[in-house]
Amino acid sequence: MKVLALALSVSALLSACICAPQMSDSQLEQTLRDKNLMLKHLKCATGEGPCDAVGRRLRTVAPLVLRGACPQCSAKEVRQIRRTLAYVQRNYPKAWAKIVRQYG
Image 1: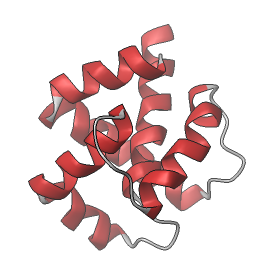
Image 2: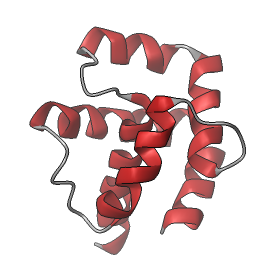
Image 3: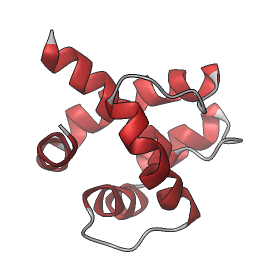
Image 4: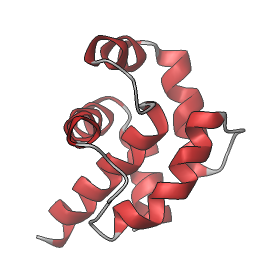
C-alpha cells in the first residue's frame, strides 16, 4: 500500500517535471518518446542536472505531491502524471529507483 502511494506521488512529481500546465496529451506523448528530453528531465528530478522552467515547477510541487495532495494540479495534470509514472517505471527503472530513494 505504501509503495503504491509512493508510486503515485512520484508519478505526480515526474509529470510536474515533464508537463507544463498547458501541455496537450500529444505533446506529453512526444516528450515521453524523446529519450534525450526524458533524460534531461529525469536528471533535473534527481538533482543531477540543470532545470528549466518546467523543472523548477517540479521543485515547487514535489513536496506537495509526495504528501499525496497537489492543490495546484488540474485534473488533466493528474491524468498526465499517472501516464508518466507508468512510462518511467517501465522505461527508466534506475532513474525511478533514484527518485523513489530521494523523494520517498
